[in-house]
Length: 104
Image (cartoon, one colour):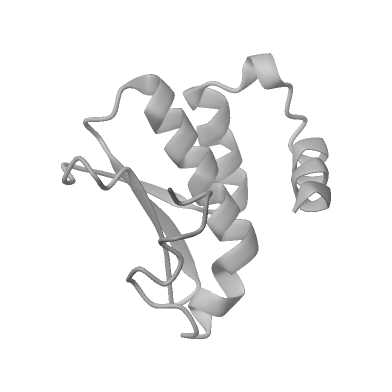
């Protein structure tokens, strides 16, 4: 995971102090990920989906900037690590990874 993170940071020229919502949206655009803002229940900050090869991320539009930024970067992790499994139907919506520390 650390190698993947380093590779993606290098590919997108990520500098920690520059990671704002505008910068994250530019990464989403390059990656071809649609951002969908929804009025979600408070416990749902974000969700990654990839239907028919069309990746999108649901973001709770009630989130303040800092939690929104975290949620958007977290969902990028799902794009990089779970896209193939999701596309192939091996992962479906649910609590399949609810106990992983990164999800908590």
